[in-house]
Image (cartoon, rainbow, N blue to C red):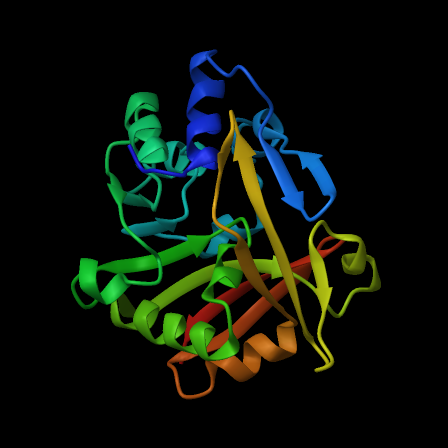
Length: 233
């Protein structure tokens, strides 16, 4: 299994009833317990706002424990990708039909042009692009592997909302509409790499689509996050 993957290891152990310790998120001296059951093993909301824009074949990026992939694969072809071997094995164990070890930031290397009709990444994974240049590169690669009439759904923490400053691991940025989050996970003495998330506003997302085929078609805000639908022009 992947070395230093406390997150995937803990989620898999939780599902199997074998978890012996909490999964911790740590930012310096600040620590929180990761809410595994609530975040990864609930049922897909059949009234989910994003579902109206998703069709098959669907690429589920950062699919976690497969909650959404299990729902979507009953409706259309769904390919679920994760960078954790623990999570890929877990998804297969739970019945995900096409779960693959793949990085959402290396899509051109893994999939053919026009392979998917829609794609989504729910869980703020797009922030792991690390920079706005990285976001633009990701959007270009996502455009390559999706059809000319494709849609995509993304979400992120919203630095334009004052409440977001209270998010775990939050770091301010002097540039309006930008911020960061940084923390690492720990489980059973295994310490994961530091995760650096680039937070960006919806307006910054619109800027990032310039030079790509994507346009922001719809958005919705939660307490500290936004969710956006992208369509190709």
